[in-house]
Length: 592
Image (cartoon, rainbow, N blue to C red; front, side):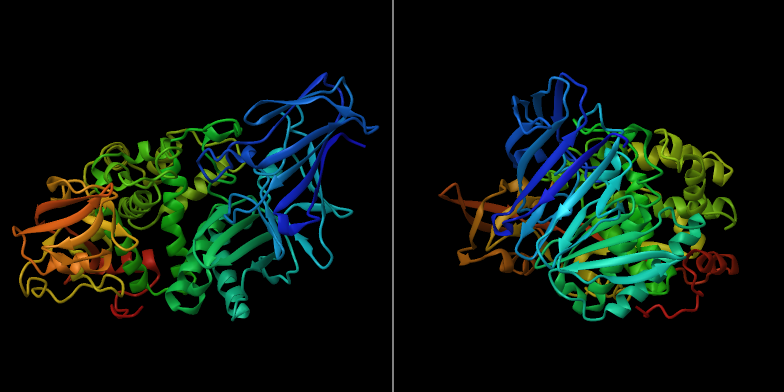
């Protein structure tokens, strides 16, 4: 029998939220250092999973207790004396996110990085997991099995393979002969046939880009909750958190499809084609790369695009969603402060740890990365007369780096220039390494132009603008420049806003405007009743002290963005539009 690291996970008392784990390591070392990762791939933040570990004991093969002591936040050192060691410990699992562990009377969900102690010396061995499940519960994991034991080829694959245990009956569908399972917790999907049919179409379109699928089976773990949305990609599976109420609306259903499309695209783009800086993963500390703008931003661009390509979103609806992304980008003052490459590098302390100043000091590499990827796709199409696109860049990276060897920090830019047949360095210098406004002129290649107006002028049904010449009707509206939470606590003061100039602070609690009671819901309309340049008196509680702050209202920046068609498109623009979105130019602009 080849040496392997072996785990047994039990849950005898689910209501305690405690997972019980045994981890057995081959002998040979006089000292054994068992460690737990501080982060998990795909979520670039130090999360300190070891804080949930308790009751650690070490045992020799004959059951004898071995000395074990904790030497730092993530390491347990065993005086092994050369014998095989079994560590027994418990994990508190009561945090339902896609990155952590959750156990209660309805199910168990656990991630490798948050669960399995490992050693650097045995990291490359096979890792076997046996799950002792309560009666009536099944175990779901993308790993292969041998005699009821899940087998990972090494620790990295184990970390990349979350487990779900519960009384579930999976939904199933197949893509190019590869079986797919959907395991749902938290509620039932009212139309499972539609869900499977829609997901199948999206997955098929992605597989065509890369010439097939890179895994023998795929598992989707879908957690329907009262709040929260997110996903975490894995090598042959994904875990998704989604609000259950969203499935009852067309927009919510569309949002779920884009979420699955996003994580599925990661099968190629980050799980196999990955930044070289992440090869191999260092689970002890931050792993820095400037390429998250591409691996997450381009994936964010493609998630909507693949739903469109699958025929599950109209071309106009796609443009509306892209307009919403552009609106969010231009509503973030931090775009003028932080470059896209820096946003990637410092994701560990900025993107995943936002505070009240984050909108003023940072930009999301998902958000700006999506816009830059859209512009890059159009630049490639324009440079090659629509013969090539961002698909070709993705395929080229897959052919060269799909073995997991890693993309160098300049690799994405080099591949894009190679596909374009021209040097795209000026494009990347501006888009990635400066905070200059992006150049949107490339939208003209597909017969589109970008427009901006104050946010309230855009339709709340997706950014379709009001008729030209009508946004100025009525008096100008006063602008304060804050966002609130709860019943009226100031959450964000926007940089350069009248509120900032006047001295309103985050955590000020609203009391009155000009002597009249005001809260978070009424503050905005009350300010908009006034004209820019008028002074209002805001009364707030600041650390229990009543303070009055006079504010001179300003004019709201033009930040709502949408894409409209040029009035007299050329035949070339119409053809480029159809090549990009797979829809004729004549498709009704109002279709959604």
